[in-house]
Length: 104
Image 1 (cartoon, helix red, strand yellow):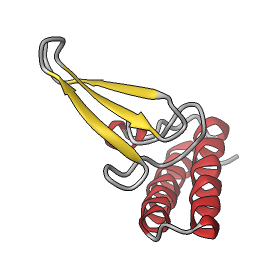
Image 2 (cartoon, rainbow, N blue to C red):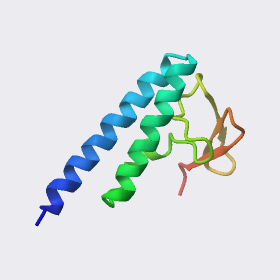
Image 3 (cartoon, rainbow, N blue to C red):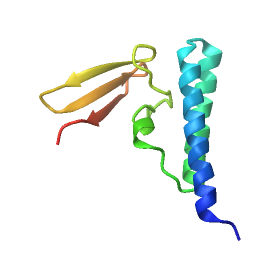
Image 4 (spheres, rainbow, N blue to C red):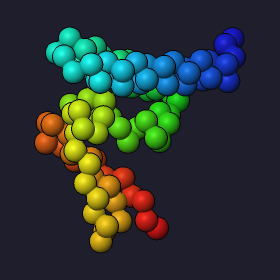
């Protein structure tokens, strides 16, 4: 019998480490690093679904739903502020938009 709380803690720690590695690889700006960053993101998603552990919100908003890129403003995405609607828009280089609400 496995200890589910311990397994969940380890899984969430691995997710955070993988996504921090993905951010470092994305900042290097070459094709091999971009490929590795996408791989790290896909592994983090697999761990999240396998062990039923959520990805933290502050990191989840920085993953493109379409292409799997880890979004770093100024490197592979643009950030736009829609103040009249109360959200930030992350525009990925693949053309996808990610909205983050900041107003209630």
